[in-house]
Length: 427
Ligand SMILES: Cc1cc2nc3c(=O)[nH]c(=O)nc-3n(C[C@H](O)[C@H](O)[C@H](O)COP(=O)(O)OP(=O)(O)OC[C@H]3O[C@@H](n4cnc5c(N)ncnc54)[C@H](O)[C@@H]3O)c2cc1C
Image (tube, rainbow, N blue to C red):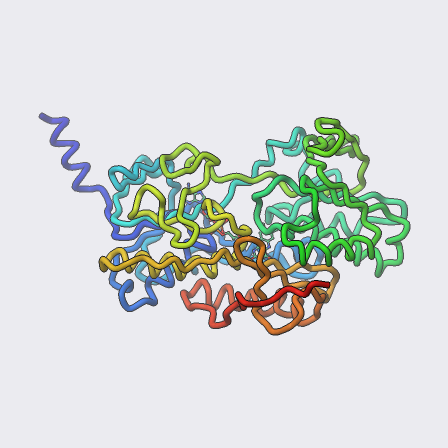
């Protein structure tokens, strides 16, 4: 009897929100702000579960690693970004029970919801590379993938001299921003060129992939950039171990004529892009597909099985490039469809797989890669998308951060549209 009473009291205490958002990163803040800005969403009770005190503008980490942006400018306090009248639950989701519309927090508290939006991003699996956690941040082993190590990348780049060897690695897809592992290679090469030592250094780009980039139009341009700098591109090379003391990196050959063979290379600098996957709590939940990603419809962003659940951002199953640019186009679809669901109207299949990757090929030069599902090129501006441009550099360094902090995270929709009827040049 006492137990039943306690249980009833506990249930009465359980928090309940109409919309519960898991993760206050790029996607979570954008969806919350956009709901608040919408006439139909502004009175909903909304909460965001987010454990972190800091929110980072991750796309600028590449520039931080190249000494072209300060780390401090990439960081804002999470509290300053949570929209007004959205409750911040400063905790971590540790269990999902979508059958009962309930999430359990690390504190042990359950939270109930009518609608759930999940966007916890990707986990960085440093430990999957033998020896990496012992040496990352020292011995010339760096990474732009964490604010902890991005400034060390710049130290390593500056430390390179005549005769030195630098290696840049790329793991199997999916990982955040498919261009980021090679962008830092080009910026390093350009730095060495300016220093007058590029031809005396050896630069290696070791990628698990068999091409430079998944979209052929841009891959062909990047082949030329690699040749221009004299970078050795090593395809189907997957980093499996690092020995920081000995300054050696070991790769497994995946495919080709010698699958399974191991190759060890010496280095003075090693830039690692770690393997990435959804957080464990997603992988082990009923919300995940076989690969561990939040199983959503690729155009509507609605969960395949649980219709009051939406997923977006890096942790969801949609086969687009995992970028903030993709979230800029996914978030309005999630918001519209959530409001449609509440009002009982038809859902829209509005997300076309758009992603954008500003490929920094040199200081002051960027190829703006924009594309949708199937690798179809869809530029926003009426300019040849293959060209390296200073304008694109300005957009990356100045325009996009303003757009991120002052528009996207404030719930405004971007007014430029990408061109889906662009015809790719045949030559
Ligand atoms: C080096 C680098 C370069 C990049 N370059 C570009 C670029 O040029 N252009 C571009 O568009 N994109 C770029 N990106 C990618 C972009 O930053 C990400 O795609 C985007 O930030 C992902 O947003 P998200 O909301 O899905 O995840 P995140 O922004 O990572 O946020 C996830 C949030 O969920 C929280 N969380 C995790 N687990 C839980 C849990 N169990 N409970 C509650 N909260 C949880 C985390 O603390 C985090 O705050 C780059 C990324 C990196 C690292």
